[in-house]
Image 1 (cartoon, rainbow, N blue to C red):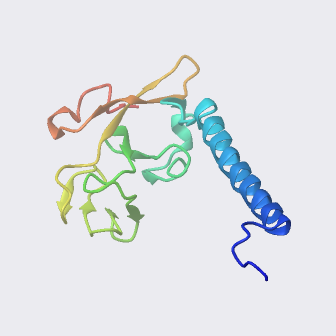
Image 2 (spheres, rainbow, N blue to C red):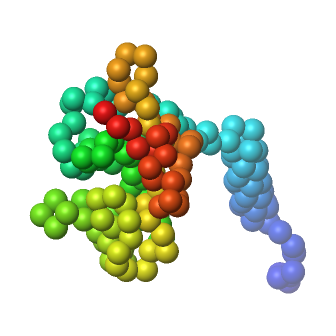
Length: 165
């Protein structure tokens, strides 16, 4: 008489043994990976807050976009002097585009418009573009300091934010 409730056969035991080891190994690998991510976190490298932008005579009148992608600034030369605008829209942080034919910055996300001075005149942006501090260094280069910024239109003629050259 053959009894069907014998328990595990040797073959079934070996199969379950390897399934257990594989599961244990995967779990141990996942824990080791998480521990490694904890011990060696990502490092965020930020762009320097202060940089040199060249000599003033390198800039023609109007908006210069050479530092738009690398430093997130526009350098503007107007009859009053130089000033530096942030390339971050004050609505939701998108990057506006300079439309030279229309003489304005236009945000592609929600349609905010800014004059070359940075003043907001259309769309949902709540305030003008931020201005950064600039000065001439000892070698005659423009020195832009993004750690110092202003948001208020009343401060725009401050000599730290409007360089008369």
